[in-house]
Length: 359
Ligand SMILES: Nc1ncnc2c1ncn2[C@@H]1O[C@H](COP(=O)(O)OP(=O)(O)OP(=O)(O)O)[C@@H](O)[C@H]1O
Image (cartoon, rainbow, N blue to C red; front, side, top):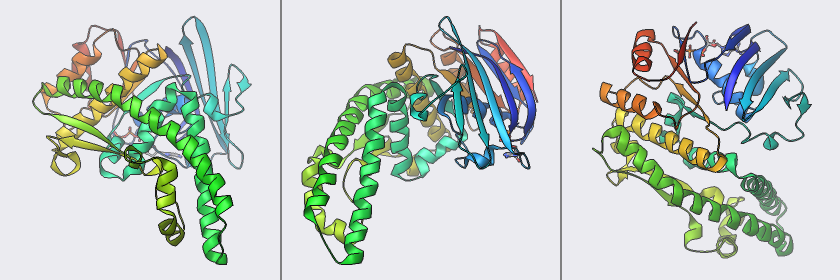
């Protein structure tokens, strides 16, 4: 799958700009704040229908403008796919594929597989479990539609159950039958999600470890450990046992929305015991493993976005990463960097075609 060209209209700091890309490596270089990341974000937007960096949709419209349009022309297999995303202030976002509007955004997810590696990934290490769950969910969802639909349903029922618990507390009342309906639904959807997460991680963890080993030259041992209350008990019993607590808290304290993924280096949390370079290598390995997994599932080479990844890495690790991507296993790659020379030297080592865009 190749992104042939990208046109931006009023997207972040761009007013009207078109890029025609190389089918292998595209380097976007320029000073801080010039818009390198914004270009990668527009490409991300075309795959996921939203920005990777700014969740407030209207803030992606250029200041003082009324709308943005992102237009991407892809070659996928033998077909040409034209994806257009537009947003007008005060209206809902529209995604069109070859002129036809999607009814549901979720129908588009997974159609253009993509992996982004960016400094913002640090949130996966430093923030709470929610960020790591979203990571797992987004990887599985890109290749498994039923997972995404179960997740959407689970979250909807969870919100309803929480609202009901609040209602009980406010009105000093309780109705076990209504709560039971939600418990059954949470149990059905949640068990499905847990089993999918478990199976996914069983495949994913060895790929991740192999990727880390390659980047670090085998110098360190890392691990991902899946934590879920569902390993010890089924959701129905968990909900039953936590009933009094949930009534007091006025929200649901047990379930797959509490799962977490622990990131370890030499069996210790990488958040506390990993150097900056080790943390960065960890995140790159995680994302490259995501790439491998998606490729295996979809049979398509995902687009790889490398946003400012060379900072904080020693030369050996940079060259290991370049070697890794200099391989037929990878498809189209977009790299952003402030150092034009560093990028050019790195991509020169690669036996692939490349284009450098100087902003
Ligand atoms: N809605 C918007 N309207 C206008 N400009 C915007 C909008 N959102 C972001 N920007 C501008 O985009 C610029 C940041 O672009 P971007 O993050 O792509 O920079 P970069 O080239 O990747 O920089 P760095 O090298 O520092 O990472 C900033 O100048 C910011 O003000």
